[in-house]
Image (cartoon, rainbow, N blue to C red; front, side, top):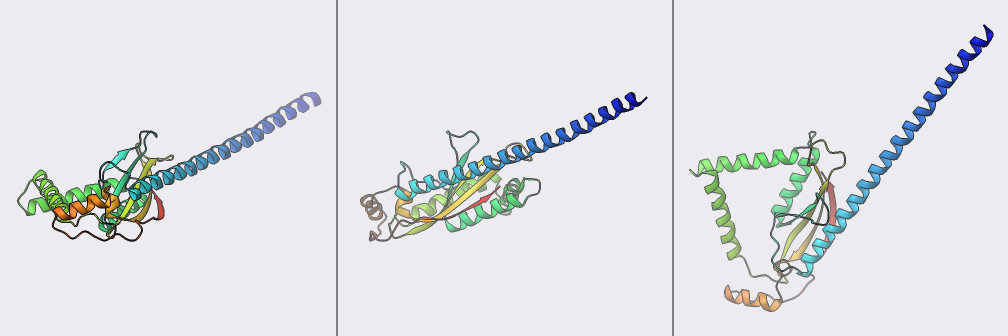
Amino acid sequence: MTGRREQGFTLIEALVALAIVSMVVISFLGIRTTALVDATQARNWRLAREIAEEKMSELQAGARETPAQSGQQQRLERYEGWSFKVVIGETSVAEEESQLANAAAGEDGEGGDRVEWQRNRENYRKATDQGLSYAEYTDKLAEEEMKRQLEEKAPSETEFEEVAVVVYYPKLDATYEGEKDSLMIKSRLSTLALAGLTPEQAAAVASAKGQAPATAGGPTGGSSGAEGGK
């Protein structure tokens, strides 16, 4: 009887020890997984900032074959699922910041989709008020924007615009497929740099528009900071 009790007690001890070891191993694996996720998130944030600063530097230097197109999201071929967007103009930058904030605040991770839906609904309402279809209304907006651009001053080293570069990258703890994290940096750049023209070319454009050429002077601007969001 004594031998059997000792064998049973030893078996219980082994089971308890195994349970303790299992808990320790699982906890260790959980810590390693969390550390790996944190390290990857930090790496993605640093990479996103480097990309944003690189794109902003290109804009500042006027190192583009064509003028920057505000609001056009472009894929980054080097990184799967990554993209960036240039936003030009104080109003447009403020609107973009608002969208990022709304997306970050959305509990279901679909804040950006809600903002887009609300904008489309507002455009449908305005189109209806003007007796136009949605397509006709968007065409009208495009024509008005083109007219505004044609009437703008020629690019100049002394005229500045607020500019933001937003980089989007895959969210690690995404709640739905395709959810993105984002990072934004802002700056004020000369319209000459944004147009990618030389001072001589800008002077020719000013002459064609019947405008006096602007005098050179002042820096083209620099990054003013970064913001992260969903």
